[in-house]
Image 1 (cartoon, rainbow, N blue to C red):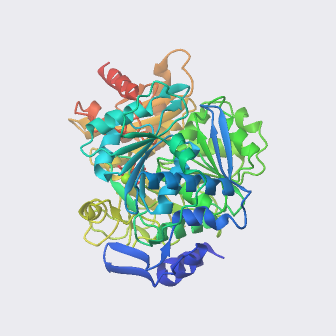
Image 2: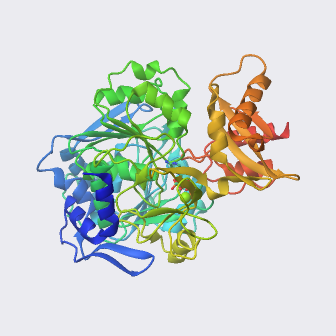
Image 3: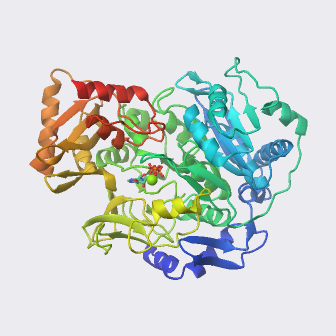
Length: 625
Ligand code: ATP
Ligand code: MG
C-alpha cells in the first residue's frame, strides 16, 4: 500500500473510505448515512449509527483478551503500580458507572474529572462514556481559578476529584482547590466525589455535597451497568484547549467518528496492534492523554501505560526502564520532556534493553532538530514528529508506519494524515503558495472523523475561532507552515510568533533552532519586542544544560554569532538573557505572548495556564537588569 494511494482515496472518496473504516469498531446500530455536511462548517459523521466508546474500549475485548493487561498505572510519586486486565477493567468501570448512577448522573450530564494520572481517572472517564455522561477532564495541575472557569462553562452535575496529587514528592491538595473552585464558581456541582489515596488526611468534607468513592464503591458491589447506546454525533466529552493564545475553548467531541479515528490511528499512525503495548507519557488531562492513554489503546485492544511522576524520578532512566519492563512498542511523548532528559547522561537510555521499542512519537510543539538528533542518536529508533491540536483529537500531520513509512525528515511532522485535506495558503490572497514558500496552514472542511464537532454550547465561537480567517470557508488554528518539494510540511510556529525586523519577517522558531544548536543550550525562547528604529527586534531567553564555567558573556557572544552566521545580521538578537526556567503552560508550551508583554512592559495577560510563576518572576528580574 502506498501512502499516496490510501491518502488520495481518503480525501477524494471520503464517504466510501470512511464507510469501510467504520468496520473497525462495534456498532449497535449501523450508520444510515456516512456524512451529513448540509450545514457547513458543521458536519456529522456516521449519522444514525449507535455505538458507545466504553463498549468498544472494554466489553468488546472480553471474549478475546480478558486476561491481557489493559492498563498499567505506574506512580513513582506514591510508589504504587497497578496492573489491570481487561476483565478487571470491566469490573472497575462498571462499579464506577454504578456509583455515578447512584449520584443521579444521566445521559448528557457533564462530569468534571480533576485527577492526576491514576487508574481511577481512566475508570471514571470510561464509566461516564458507558452511561452517556459527558466527561470534561481538567488537568490536575490547574489551580482553583482554572477549575472554576471550566466548571462554569461545563456546568457539571458532578465533580470527581482525587484527595490530592503529588509532584516531585510534594503533596498537592486537590480537594482544597476543589473547595476553592466551588466557592468561586457561579454554578458549582451539587456533588463532589472524592477518590482518596490517603495523601491528604486533613482534607475536610462538606456534608451533603462531598461523597467518598471507596464507601460508595463498597455499597454498589460488583454490578453490571448496561451500556447506553449513543447516536454517533452525541457529545462524548469536552476538553479545553491549552490556552496558549488566550481563553481556552471547550472542544466538543462526538462518539462514532472519534471511535473510528482512534481505532484507525492506532494501526495506521502508531502501528500498535491488539496485544501490543503503548506508553504515552501525557497527562490524562490533555488531548494526547484522552486519545492515546485511554481511548486509542483500549479501543485498539492494546495495553496502555499511564505514568504519574517526574521523568527524572527516581532517575532520568525511569521511562526507559518501563519500556524495557513492559515491552513497550510505541512511546509517545513531547519535545519538552525530551529536552528535560537531554540535560542528563545518555547512559540512562543506553543501559536498557529496548528491543521491543519500535517508534518514538513526539507532539505538541515544534520538535527542534538538536533535540530530535539527540534522542535519535541515543535510541537509534525512528523519532516521529506529530502535529495536531486539541481540536483535531488525533494527528493531522504525521508519518504512517502502519500504512507506508516515509523516511523521517527532521524538522517536519511529515504528511497529512488520512482524511485531512490540508494546504498552505497566502494569508492575504488565500491562494495556495508554491512549494518552499511560507504560508498559513489550513484544512478544507468537512473535517475528518475524530475532530471537534463544535465549541461547547457556542457554535458562533466555533465559526469565529476556526473558520472565519479567510474568504473561503477554511479551518485554521493559525500556524505557519512550509511544504517542501517532496510534500513534507514544516510547522514554523503560530502566526503571532513572527518578528518583523525592518520589514523582514522572521519566524521565532528559526532563531530558536539556531540558538538551540549551541551545545550548551537546553532551550531557547525568542520573541519580538518593539523597537523605535526597526519596528521589532528579537529578544532571547535561554536555559542552559549546565552552568557556564567562567564568563557567560563568551557564551552569549557565541550564540549571537551563530544567529548572524546562519540567519543574517537582521536576525541578531538585541539581547540574550540566561535564565533557569522559561514560562510555559501546564502542557509544556512556551508562553511567548506573556514574555513579549513583559518585555514591552505590558500586562502579561491571562496567566491561568502558567506552570511555574517563579519562571515569570525570573524573566521580570532579567528584564529589569
Ligand atoms: P490555545 O488554542 O488555547 O491557544 P494551544 O493551541 O497551545 O492553545 P493545543 O491544542 O494543546 O493548544 O496545541 C495545538 C498547537 O500546538 C498547534 O496549533 C501548534 O501550534 C502546536 N503544535 C502541536 N504539535 C506540533 C508539532 N508537531 N510541531 C509544531 N507545532 C505543534
Ligand atoms: Mg490552538
